[in-house]
Amino acid sequence: MRAASGVRHEEEGILLWMKGDEAMLEVDGVRYADCRRHPLREPWVDAGRRGMNFRAVGNEPGWHLEIRAGRDLPMITDYGQRRVEAPLP
Image (cartoon, rainbow, N blue to C red; front, side):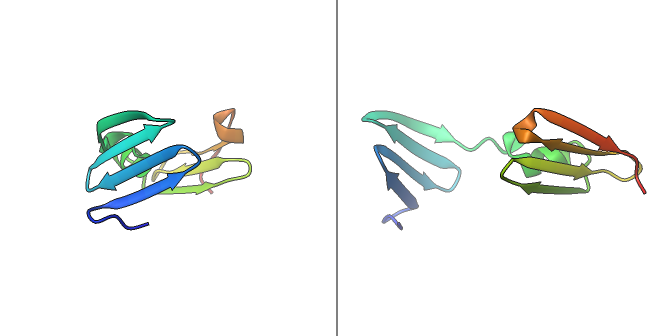
């Protein structure tokens, strides 16, 4: 749902309002104001910062694969519980 300024999502006692890099979260009447985006914690930005050239993700169960030139291919599956590495072809 579009708000007058930013984007507002509301469902089952949870309200999230976002505008640019700022957000406000309310859970069961408890308000967390002045929330801010932390770009280094975003998976895509973090992967690039660590030198990855490609990142793929999927779900059910959750998995991700990262590729960096000249390195093995690490695949994390089962929501981070299992790690499998394969050599580059």
